Picture: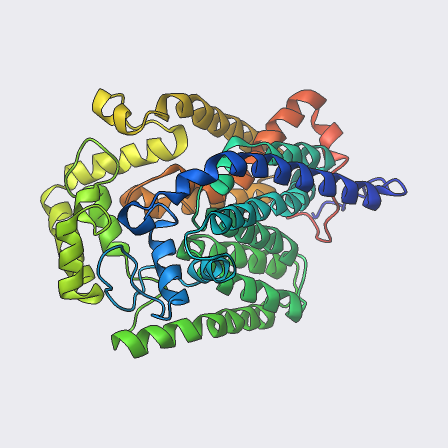
Length: 446
């Protein structure tokens, strides 16, 4: 027997305006605190050593190459190595636009790109609010918005880092929000927009492929359970997604004369995280940015041949040392979720912030798991999208190498689950939150 749908109490008059003000104030507060951080940290990106390598690393070098008219290439300092597919195109072109407007490696460019990333992080408050409200209720949504505004990781990964983390986090959070909404929608234009955003996100960070197809499949399953058409809109979404990626695929094939997917650096990432250097979670001596010998080899062989050699090196090492690979994978799992890698004095000399990071990282993980468990008790169907994110998104980092920014795109969902736990404790009863949950136009599962 199918349970009767519940009818929540009507929202108070002016609730929409109240939510708009909440989001406006939260976004402005988040942006303000991030810009204060930018004012203190931007000089650290102006170091001219290694041809301003600290200004965006590979992203900065490719952006420089674009602005100087050498095309999308030359991802390392030193000699020009030609076209590259080491990075997907979105973030290098964003930074190239900043360089074109404010100058290459200038103070104005540093302030501009860090401010732009701070804006991306601040705007993430908006999808966080609607995700939390739809999943867990208005109280959780309010808590989540303000927690994100002042969340240390969100501030650090945007205001003190030139990379794609803030932009990609905004895109992935919007995709997560869209996937929740598509569970109740068969509108073709909505699914087409989802495919468009999915494509742009994939051209920003291919890690999106680990979770968004599963979120889309879950939305299709929910529509199927309602007896609604899901295949036509899903096909439209897939076609739009492929159309967005097609120019980049064509460019790579024309330049490298072989199919190259979104990026070609996976063999290098395998080497960096697994070959040698048992002390750290990465080995800079096996990549061009950390070794002059490797840089010369990259220049001599060319990018595609170099990556082929790295694939052989990584495969041979893993085949000969499967136990080490497995143990390091376990340690990478612990590092992603607890922040702990080693208390070796030599390691802590390289990573002095780890001891302070461990309690915060582990604490947020534990609180998120508590929130996950509380919502699992209330309804397993509601928690499935969160489980997809938590289980599948970090998988690639367990076998390559971890870094705290790699967990960054998961932080919005972690923040929401943390706030779910907090609100549950504060309300003291399940009904208090269930009464405020946003209505959804679906019948409960049998």
